[in-house]
Image 1 (cartoon, rainbow, N blue to C red):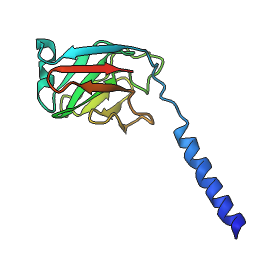
Image 2: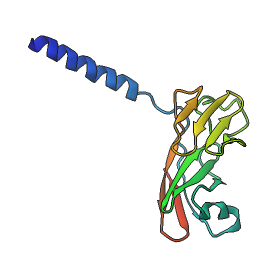
Image 3: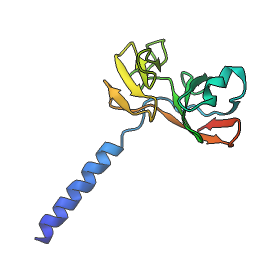
Image 4: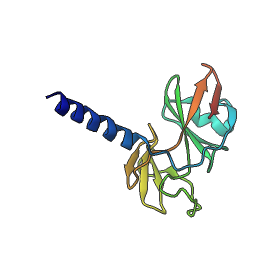
Length: 141
């Protein structure tokens, strides 16, 4: 009986390790930038649900204001195209801005959390974000 329990636990441990071992294929390019959401170029980030593009990362960054004090930032480089053969970075769908589209590979991703919605096994590369509570948002990795 112990052997069966040990075998079962070993199988569960090994199967969980296999699915977590895959690294995001998008290059991790170091950067550290701070933006002021009161500037005209980032004014859409002043309200919840707003998004804006920021220079940095592999193909640029999209920042989304998920809540009053919560921002998320994702690389616009599609994980379906790690070699960068498609010259179009990800962009919000005109019908649903909470979806980011990869028109070259027909993949879509959630702007809310970066998870794959269709045609991708990887989510978007996410970056760390700090909000100072008034107008400064730091994005870094």
